[in-house]
Image (tube, rainbow, N blue to C red; front, side, top):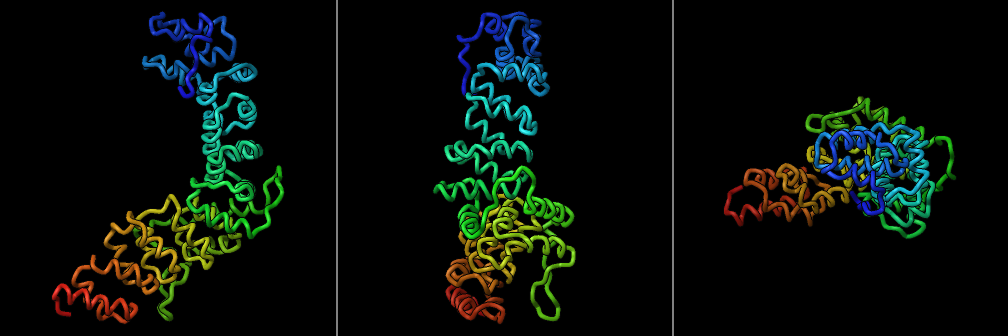
Length: 376
């Protein structure tokens, strides 16, 4: 258990219940929180420790007790002295129970790491409870990161805690597109905290619903299609409602959707005209290789997005992504030229003759063929 509990501070009955040599029936009763003579705080401590027992039956019983603690026992325990390690075990189990979590978060011994885990797992109401303690947020930036990346956190609250971090010069490396989000937050007016969901919060949920209705498999589907008349990419009809919802969002809202949303949202937002939004989409922690394959082939994404892909060793292990980057006229030549030596001869021949790539790429492809002594 982290932090560990000092067993010497426990009463004799509690230590006996924790002793592997004690009678199994007594330990089973203790695992169920039924050991007579123990105060609530000590009874909960014993249950939490037995949940990590090497005896499978004891551990299973204690785990079951922790998952269904009688409310009077928990309230009584929280009113007394509880070891930080016990609070760390109990807190995540109540990340969606606001009345009890209010008491747990108010306990002076709760470890910061436990609050961060709660922030990651919390429902909307519990995330609001965590977000109000600005002093704690500033002292433990990981809590801000977990709240921001939790989809249950209100959009207005995510904006507010992000603005708090920016205003106080706090770096948040746990938010993949933090620099983009921080730049955007500085351009927007942040609403005052509200007990009720704001219009921005409602919009965020509406987008979530629209995204669920417009799910796609990036291996077989894209949010865009080529217009036969113009040869330009246009949004497929299936994704127009989601596209319209996203278009009504602020920059900071789009950035958060880019990091937390679905593949269809990322494939729409990576083509956004705002550079900060597009960069957030390509930096999403949920981004998959088959999405990058489609993005690297798109002629409707910005140079910076293609530059980020080209600089990522993980993505450029894929031959198809390398080929797409070389073929994409929007890929900066510096990066396309570095990828040309990896191309197969027949692709180099195609590039050497193609009118759909920049002349510099065609010339470099011919030079590469010449070095290989392959005729065009």
